Image 1 (tube, helix red, strand yellow):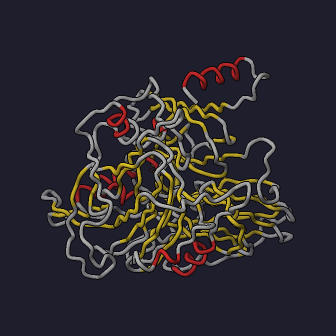
Image 2 (cartoon, protein in one colour):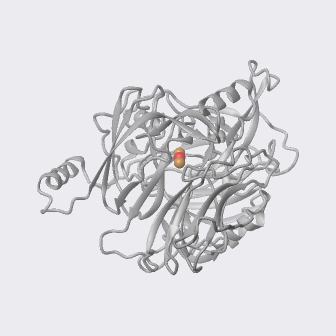
Length: 557
Ligand code: C2O
């Protein structure tokens, strides 16, 4: 919709609600500090409205959402609505210096976007520095009024947000790491809805408790809002039926364990088929390469009504940290629902055939004493992305030159044994490079992990689009053989996908959203190190195929 049409609809809706169904949701997000005690120690954290996790944003498919973000902290702030497609409204997408300049202390910005063609669970989070450690919350998009779920309506729905907690200030953690050139400290605990649950070094703290009735079905809207860790999620004595990921319906399947990467969401049904009792819920790390993680298990409880407080909790053992097979069983079970009502529109032909390596590197850093004069970096196609000081979307829209170049490589500069043990070239190039796509062109992108320093699972997130995960494998992608096994019928559709450690994934999407769209590893440490790039999607020729003009209160750099 053009701006003036949206304005008229908004006015009618506000002043004459009986005339049109009010489809505007208004929120105020006051970004403020809050003193919080966890792990038996207290620190000040950055929150929205003093809440951790932050408030849940509820909307219905087709609603317009207006969020006034008021910055009352000392940091620059921006908020990203992770997974919301933002059709033509890149100005509201949120990544700092990509689609907007950050909101400076004392300033505010009204995020204004419409949710179309999506329903399910997503998350919002800060998209600057490491603030999303505590600045995050759920987005719940209900189907249009009168449209049922493609599964029996659950008795109740519960948001389950998984996170990571550091005892020290997270900005201090990453700043200290950048100075040294080495990896930052891992977190001190994982959390379920803000609570680590009892731990050996702080046994007194209670965990999150979900009271349930026997004989019902509950839907858990599970979100991984952690900074740097993929997680396993498990409930003692109960199976989970997965029905949706990243706000797209999947063919339902049963599982004991869910694996979920930062930025991903999973809706799962749980049948409360016990009569009484308390059952342990766990969130524990998944890491199948030799990289340090926080090995604490977050604990919560499901508590049947009528169960005595003194009743012992039925325990479950989380999978071992390196349980690749458990993770694969889950990932390989994911298929798009692909029903008549919710078809999987997988591009069957491709205009751009791309291959990007993702991985780490080492660059010189004369001031990095602890790193012996070098620092760990990360890159895509060997380019370590340098953040600009003018937002890319402004530079594109207003034709400001010198902010970015359009020469992001379509494939690795050199073919090498990507996942091999002895890669020769550790050093990366630096630059603010984007890849240009014509409006509505179709893209196939192979994301290939490298073994430089160490192979590792990278959850890659694309802004502005959903994509289909059409194939994956271990080792080096083979363009002659591997496409024969691609699933072009019902591959899972999502916005964040794990590139397997020492392997590759292939995705497809249609570039039907003009703007500048960030793509990066959703492990925040890797984003910081430069594992990021952007697609620039040109305007189309049709009436609704161009970026809308920027709002008047768009922050200035
Ligand atoms: Cu959820 Cu660019 O991030």
